[in-house]
View 1 (cartoon, helix red, strand yellow):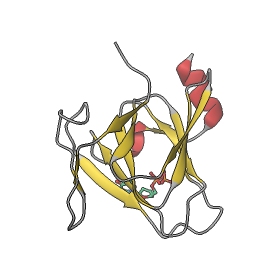
View 2: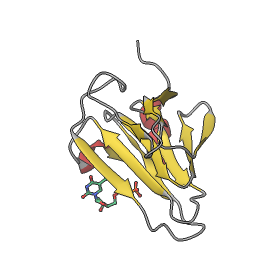
View 3: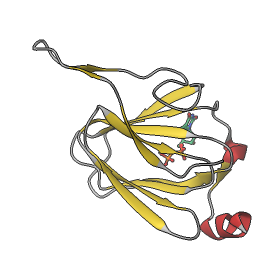
Length: 133
Ligand code: TYD
């Protein structure tokens, strides 16, 4: 069964010296990590993403600051505000996704179960809608 997107709360080790969170393959997130990348220095008003992945799964965390993740599966659009480093959004394959409304100094960490593969992208929304049918 393929689940939809959902928020995953990560462990949070409280400490007066500063808090610590972590994630591990197939424990806190439902896949093994092949790649990590991050998005930063986003100018005000800019959007990232604007594409779908055919097979790739992702987990997105706001390590710093805040931004919104907008997901569309050709039937409905959903929006999440990420603004804490101890939880993130699991995004299954087959969702059109954008990152929007970045705060100053926002840092988006994305972990993925696939190496970078341009063939896995759908970058045209009308092609995405056809592909979903
Ligand atoms: P892209 O995924 O389109 O960025 P976004 O969805 O955030 O707008 O990637 C932008 C560029 O960076 C594109 O030319 C491909 C390159 N890139 C890599 O080389 N490796 C990667 O892991 C990622 C995510 C992107």
